[in-house]
Amino acid sequence: MKKNIYKASDRGHADHGWLNTWHSFSFANYYDPDKISFGKLRVVNDDTVAPGKGFGMHPHDNMEIITIPLSGALEHKDSMGNSGVIKTGEIQIMSAGSGIYHSEFNHSKDEEVSLLQIWVIPDKRDVDPRYDQFAYDKSKTLNNLYQVISPEKHDQGSWIHQQTWFSLGELDEERVLRYSLKKQGNGIYLFIIEGKIETCDVILEKRDAIGITESEEIEIKSLDKSKILLIEVPIT
Image (cartoon, rainbow, N blue to C red; front, top):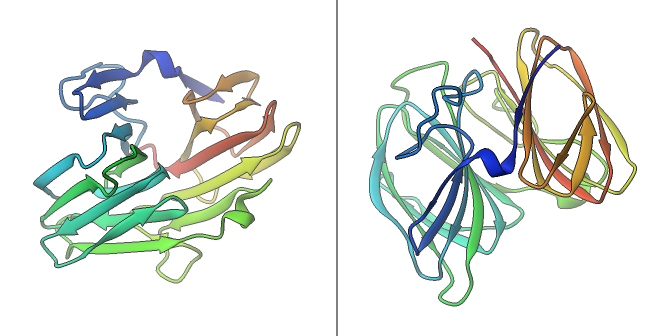
C-alpha cells in the first residue's frame, strides 16, 4: 500500500472577495509540482461563493466535471440550452467533450453557496457534450458508502466517461466501513467533508484527504460523526 496525505491546510487558497476557494491540486494561479493530480483525478476545488455572485460564461472541453453542493443552491446555464438550480442533495455532471460553455452563479441573494467541483480526465476525447443533474437519497448514505457516479449508463446514480466510481457516506461515531476496488489497479481518493476518521493508520479531519494505491481494500472508521466522499479512479 502507498499513501499520499493531503492536509486541508496545505491546499492552495485564493480569496477573491466573492469567491473563497481551496485547491487540492494545481489550479489557476496555484501550482505545486507534487500536486498535479491523483491519477485521472485532476481537480478537487472547495468553493464558497458570495450571494448573487458567480462564474460568467466560460468554456471547457475534454473533461468530466462533477459539482456537489454542500450548502445553498447553485444556478447553472450552458450552451446546450440547459438551465436550472442545483441544491444540496443533488449532483451535477457535465461531460465537456468536444466543447461547452457554461455559467455558475449563487442562486441566493442572501446566503453563500458551498460546493465541491471535481474534474476527472475522460477516457474518450471529443465526445458529444452531455449534461445531467439528479437528486440522491441521502438516507442511503447513512453509515454506508452510497454510489452516486460510475462508468455505466444504467448503474446506480449517473455516469461519466471514465472507469471511476464516486460514493458518499454519512457516518455515525465509531462506525466502520470497508471499500473494495471495483477495477484492479485503480486508486482510492478519500476526502473528509466533515468530521474525523481513521483509515490506513492515518487520522484525517475536515477537508483532509488521502490517496491510496496498491491496495485492493481499505477500512474506514469514523472517530466523530462524519461526511466523506470516496473516489475510485484510474492511476494511469
